[in-house]
Amino acid sequence: DVQLVESGGGLVQPGGSLRLSCAASGFTFSTSDLHWVRQAAGKGLEWVSSIIVAGDTFYSGSVKGRFTVSRENAKNSLYLQMNSLRAGDTAVYYCARAGGNHGWYAFDIWGQGTMVTVSS
Amino acid sequence: ENVLTQSPGTLSLSPGERATLSCRASQSVSSSHLAWYQQKPGQAPRLLIYGASSRATGIPDRFSGSGSGTDFTLTITRLEPEDFAVYYCHQFGSSPTWTFGQGTKVEI
Image (cartoon, rainbow over all chains, first blue to last red):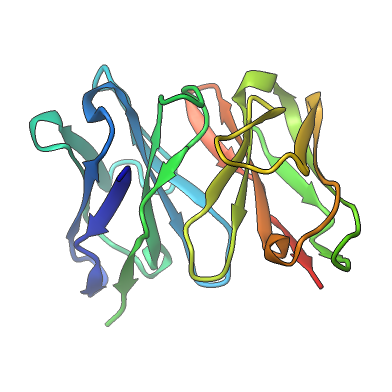
């Protein structure tokens, strides 16, 4: 089965850190662009970060300098290191893939999401 | 930053009716960079349309996308009960960045 499975979410205090993981299976991970998207409760989707095949990384303005995205092709895994967490980072975090049959600009595979709660 | 504005915020329709959802960009978007997603409560988004008008694998032909430049439309020709959900448009922009619209809820 083609799938992405996130893990690593949980409750963390403001200013703390958390590392999310996303395990891929069923497709060629190394030739896929990978993305993190988050969704606060009752809100819309917000792009967070991306890492493309070439290894270049990109971040939204709201997380730049605090979050770091990385990938380990040998393990078919994507990561998001989140530092200096704030209450506004509270959301479900999804990993997603682009670069399959639907081109490089649409996210055609999504994980089920992992919940991150930043609260004291 | 290219802002995507979806309208209406909520669309109240009945099964069998036609739904027309709008996505307007503050700057021109390449058609190849525009996608639509469906999201149901408690689920991850699902890709419906990519390249503004191409249906993703397994998407029924009652879903269609159109538009260019700054105005894009998602049309559902005959609503089925399972189509009641929130729909998001999405674009790839310069920098690069990826942007979502705020969503349109299609409700009964």
